[in-house]
Image 1 (cartoon, rainbow, N blue to C red):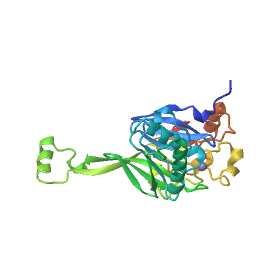
Image 2 (image 1 turned 90 degrees about the vertical axis):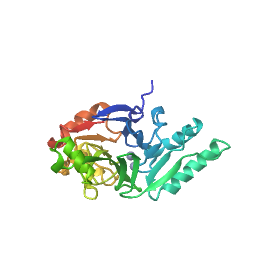
Image 3 (image 1 turned 135 degrees about the horizontal axis):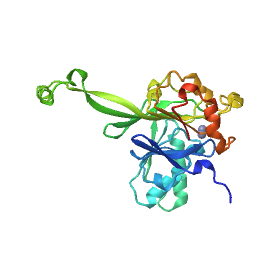
Image 4 (image 1 turned 30 degrees about the vertical axis):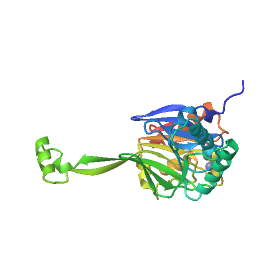
Length: 282
Ligand SMILES: [Zn+2]
Ligand SMILES: [Zn+2]
């Protein structure tokens, strides 16, 4: 039997209230879906379960992160689903639109897919449902690139009113007092491919409940490869370990030079000690 490429075998990871599906290995494919919000981050491959997601956020347009979108667009059209949206880093929208148009022409007489391509720039926000939005943050790679944060916004009772009886709170509310205040929380973030962690420009990423971080290189012997290849090494996380307030750090996008079975041991042997209990090897 011919062995499957590891990144093409998706898995499902529980993140407390959320569920992440997908896989990622450098140069093979990266694709992730947040099941509860039905949104996809990168689509180097498009499993059946991802076709119904109407919003796809691409971190950049390298083939292994974007190749599945044509299949996704064609399948949605064939199944008569509503047109979806592909969000891409600003500057890459024209290229992506050309790819989709060219393929649609080859596909059949209709000559176009009913999805749209939307450019997102640094700090741009898209609301995906009431109280839940996705915000882009710039990263550094060999092509235009960005990561994304999923931000939850809720109204919470102000601390000065929290201990009052409900009837009293109701009365103050009727009198027009501002009883609540908006509270935001980053429930998920994904870096995509980058040669620098984004915490100086987007410090909120370091507070995410779950951070999916690129970690192409693990072994100390490969530290010199990360910068020239526009990627991250496990050491980059050690450098910021004290500022990382994430609940879980999911490391992924490992180079294919590492054997699947060796990766967990290699990561655990080399990760900063303060991250050891929060790191999840994908
Ligand atoms: Zn990649
Ligand atoms: Zn890339």
